[in-house]
Each structure stands twice: as C-alpha cells, then as structure tokens.
Length: 191
Image (cartoon, helix red, strand yellow):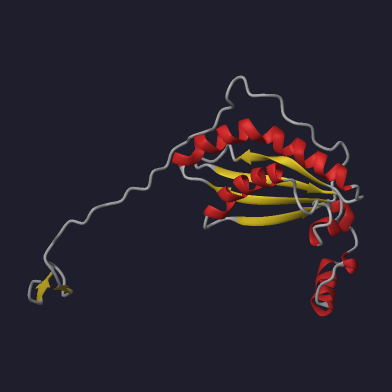
C-alpha cells in the first residue's frame, strides 16, 4: 500500500488523500435482455378447469435457473394433464363438498428470467385453512407428481406463496377478522 500523502489540486485549495495504488478489479456485468417467451408449436390442448368461479386461488411463486428450465417444461408437458386428472379423480372419490383443483403452472412471459406461478383453486376458505379438500392420504402417484412440482418451489430461496379470494366474497369490511381498532381506523379512513 502506498504511503499516505496529500495532493493539491490545481486552481483549488482542495486536498485529496492517496490511500492505495491504482488497480483494476473484475467487473461482473448485469445482463439485461428483452427476452420474450414464445409458445412452442404443437403443445397439447390445456386441461379442463372448473366452469364456476373458485372461492380461493392459492399461488406458488418461484423461479428456476435457466439450466433447469427445459427440464421443468418437459416435465410439465409430460405430467401436467396427469396431475390435474389424478387430483380431480382423488377429490371426487373423497366425496366432500370442498374441492381443490390444479389450475396450471404459468411462466411470466414478459420477464427475461424464468419466473413461474402454480395455481390451485379451492371451493371454500375452509378447504384451504383446514386442508379439507385434499384426500388424505393422497394416492402415491399423485403425491409424487405434486412433490416433484413443489420441489422447484422449495429450491428457490426467493419463493413465496399467496392466496387470492374472489373479491365479491369480501364486500363487507366489518367481516374482516383483524384488530378491531385498526379495522375501525381503516373503515373511517375509507369514508
């Protein structure tokens, strides 16, 4: 390390301290691209989804490394129909009013990075909260399919999970099970 000395700048009284020898460090570039994903020709027809609106949509948000993208897409192409069909059969055989449906795994086509959302539809909030819509135990082949898909979510450290309720079911703010003080403040602020 060079000795500390002071340099006077021309036309100024400013003084700069010299702390070390000049050097070059590697630059790690940020790669930005305008990749837009395009559908692959010849994809099978999408599987059937429920005709009536669902009370809750549960969403797994995750990304995969580029090197795993083709593997995931090939797996989805080979197994997504089976997952949806086996789940529907297992839920129907379960015989309960609450139902869960696999609604698909979606790629964010406006992002240059492979970011996904897997959607599950539930017929009631209780079906999500108490997991009453899921047959227990799951048939082994169905369980294996869900474990494989969930594995992609688990491996992403930035993963998240969200639930969305059909907005028309939440029309009355006074039914919200929150802190009554903050709820009242929110209702007053909305007036």
